[in-house]
Image (cartoon, rainbow, N blue to C red; front, side, top):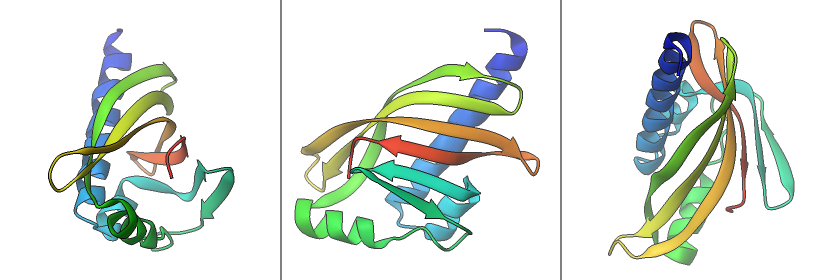
Length: 130
């Protein structure tokens, strides 16, 4: 990687790591800090638009915990597919786990990160998971 691309990759990976830590803590405010708004999420054939911080529905995690026993998630592979100085596309996957560390599922996704307002944040997510 070039120096610029390597720096972008490191900053985006840090953003993704903070986002996953916030997700696992069920911390909506911390998740919001790693996103840009309006934020787009494509999953299960539906497009959701989160207009502003605080609009990320946390009931998804409650439903996953209730129906599947979800306790936490972890990133698998994260590949920077393409980038400019202000936008990066990542092909990635994550695994959802139960409290006993058994696997619920592995889900491939595409995330778009944007450098805006002086920071990298997740602008859009397209996932094959619920």
